[in-house]
Amino acid sequence: MDKLNESQITELLLELTGWEYKKGSITKSYKFKDFKEAFASMTRIAFECEAQNHHPEWENVYNSLTIKLNTHDAGGVTQKDIDLAKKIEFLMTS
Image (cartoon, rainbow, N blue to C red):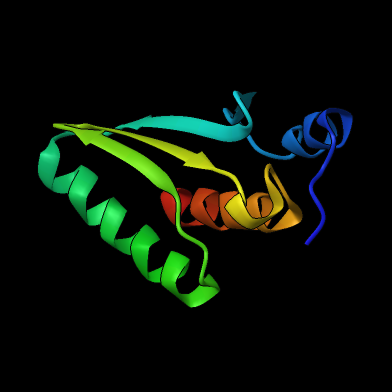
């Protein structure tokens, strides 16, 4: 999969609320009611990541979750990252 350039990433991120391009990854932070809700959301996301065989860098502290996506094999952000971000958004809003 080909690495996207910065203008392509910027254009595609217009379709994703709250996602930003930072330091070679697309990233978003979420806040939840408590740790249990954050962990449950991480579990839902984990099943989708496994299905896509694409795994994020993420950090969870109590009720917050920060997700960073890039395709290591391509050396940057690819369409695969955009697709996973869209699916994560769907999971977080349904």
